[in-house]
Image 1: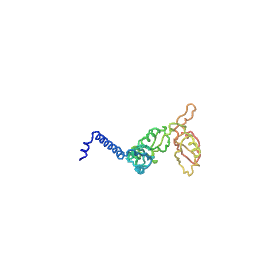
Image 2: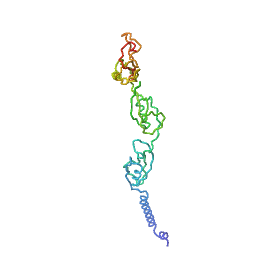
Image 3: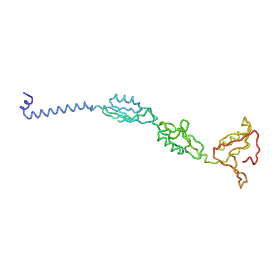
Image 4: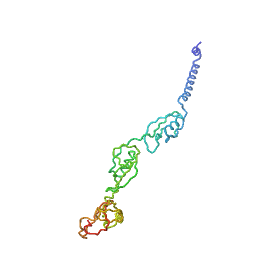
Length: 274
């Protein structure tokens, strides 16, 4: 006699109980097997792999049962190449085993940047622009110019770099900046008849620079020579109507003053003023 025939001979309520019991058994088996299939209940704390190189990070995460996907790469010149910059989920989050951890790493090769033309920019604008492009500001050297804090030149390793040149992100750019001194006009010091050493001291103390030396004589030691004339001249070809004396010449600070020198001490005359 088959099982079905035996069940049909039993009262209906017995069959109902048997059916309910079978359903409960199936439900219990499914509940516990679902946990085995999905790993439900098995969790792990996510370790911190930021700053580690990608291979070490992958090894550490795999050892805890995580999957690893490199989601993105960006470039940060101050950090090691192939280092992990970000991770998701964040460190110390508690997640299921087998969860995928997404990583952002530092690029090995620096992206190429097109060098801008900074000449004419203000110093602050140039610094901001370089930082936005991912370039770094090196030394700032000042040079005589009529404009203050305006870029006169841009240098890479001491050499002018043309706008449009391709350079690596993070490259250091040095800047030459105007100091504004050429907008200030000062009276040219009169060093006629002075020995060369004294004349040099007076010129530099007045804010000018020493230019070239010239002479019609053979002079082995300029320290023994005297100033016969200078360029620019300390006087203009104009007479002051009040003092009836030649008017003083005024030129920008740091202008080089060139000296014509000789071995004999000259005598002041009207012609030597101009």
